Amino acid sequence: CEKVEEMSLTSPSDITTDVEANAISCFEGANGNILVTASGGTENFSYEWSNGDIENSTNNLSEGNYNITITDTNNCAHSETVYISEPSQITLDAVVGDISCASETNGSINVTASGGTGNLNYAWSNGITGTEVNDLADGPYELTITDDNNCETIESFTTGYYIHLTLPTNYLF
Image (cartoon, rainbow, N blue to C red):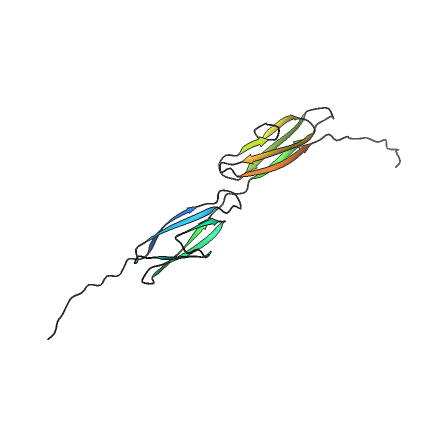
């Protein structure tokens, strides 16, 4: 006696991923994160990140590449690399114009900044906003530059008065 049955074997589909990566908000920060949603394969996935995390998400990331390996119940694996970026550092160039006489208020500071994310906002310690301050007296001034992510750079400047002496050529020390 013999029994013949027909069977159809299907293999599960490949593991696929949907990746949501959030970049770091400030230069040299560590607030990036990645969320991976796996599908296909055979459910009950395990996750292993290159930084040691074992969930489908990893947080508090600095700039760089992060590798994830997703393994299903049948031990089928899918690996992926995700890059977390960071904005460029806020940098600036400045031109300081010193005052012409000790009692004058004709000093100035003009800055050009770049980097960060989005628009840059300038706030001076004397209440002025913008890239240039004029009519300054002798003294220290602080500038806080903030980008759209509220990342900031603080720089200090000093305007001064310098005495320029002209000594006779026959003056002896």
